Length: 468
Image (cartoon, rainbow, N blue to C red; front, side, top):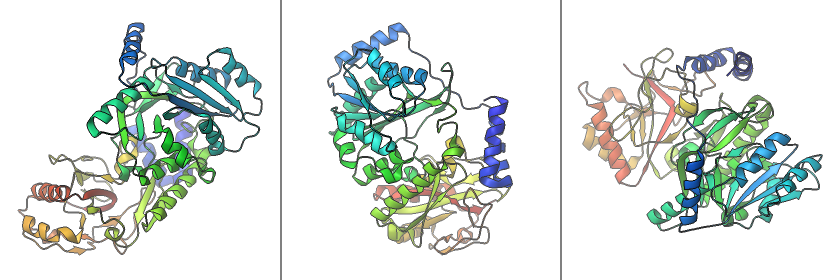
């Protein structure tokens, strides 16, 4: 990132979040010793030939419809987008472009210049918004799966090949085809000669999805499901987020492909570099989450966090009244509420601390450390427990489970410096444990008991207590 871009981003941080929170965000971005880059490299001609042979040998060849809503697209970017689709090593595809541009002749001419029957250009009579325009393309799609592509972004040459490979492998594992597939991504500079900011995504986590649309690019969905749900105009700006949340509600099966299959264009008019100018999109995200909560009878408030595109899904009252599938909710333990570091919280099954050592106030890789998410193990020192497991807690720790609001507990939102804990935010009274208690051992044993009973573990980082 050049000096001017960095300065503009820093000013945006402060305007959006105020001096204190903005300075913290600047500090975190500057503290990275290795700024996020991308390890993507273009395949060689030989590798492309191998990919084509692999495509021909696949046991399944579904038609994939790539749909693109276009609007006043830069001609150079548009041509690159089309060519990235036509260059796919998996060739059973169709590209459907719904053009709502004010002057359609340019894009129409480029589309027709390829003389490829797989390209279907639709000139829309007027611009009805991103959702309505996308639905126009959706109505023309005849594929079994539909891939979403923005009008100035790029697919890697093996994107659709890897999608079909994953459909096949998922089917072998589960006996059914996946409903939604997504991949890792990176960003491509406007000049088109450098890749940056690889986003290595986690496997599907519905809890994390309630805090951020980390799925985003590349999203591929069964045509039958997408045509049933469609895009809703009242959620323009977060229409893809709304679609995914409703797919979760439908019980869709999600599959993650841990490879870069999508390049998100960084240009002056794109959301990737111009987040401050598109805050309406993040307000639409709040609205989509509110609709999801209402549809699931969950009592919750939704807040925009200081990093745009990230949300706090704050349960109201007793969380277990809304989420009877959750066995425990755990926060984090820090060595000091202001200048300390994370010393406890979310762990893996071996007891390794996932966000250990992260300074207080920092949000981590793609801001995920501040997001609610599923966990394999939680630290019992900052824990609320479903009554179903109170007896198990006693048998493991030798101490009866009890809750209170400790003086050291804060309930933090990343856009706040802190506030007093509220009703329903009491946690286990860790001071009742004996000094010699093996916290990690007890935490892992209790967490395993909860998992084996079929309940989930929810990491809730806005709950924080100060430890040693």
